[in-house]
Length: 137
Image (cartoon, rainbow, N blue to C red):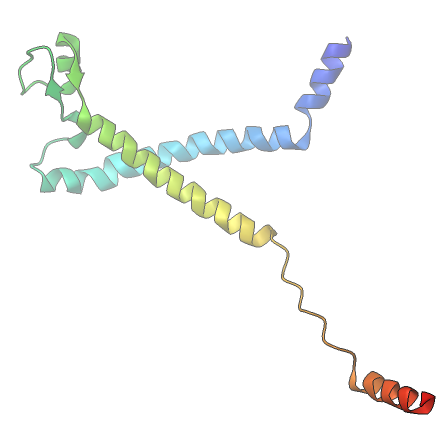
């Protein structure tokens, strides 16, 4: 029973809950970025380079015909699917940049405001010190 209690304390820590929420939101956000790349960014790029689906560009490695769709070419043997790799790489770069911006923003919000350097003593204090020093002399 002690192990079950230890696990319960571990699972209910605030950081563990935050991590779970972060993973769930990250997975949903990843789908948004996938859609952004596949549905918004890649079609214009594809249009510029010939109108084909960019993610289906490949080099056959097993003597497949060049005109086959990527899925069929993979069934026929190994392929060097550089278009799909570049699409996934673009997804990663966009996701990494957005996460970097989010972490940067959170760091700025959490960072304590710089404390102003304490100004010297007030003018009255300085005058009182001068009077004190002159009385001592």
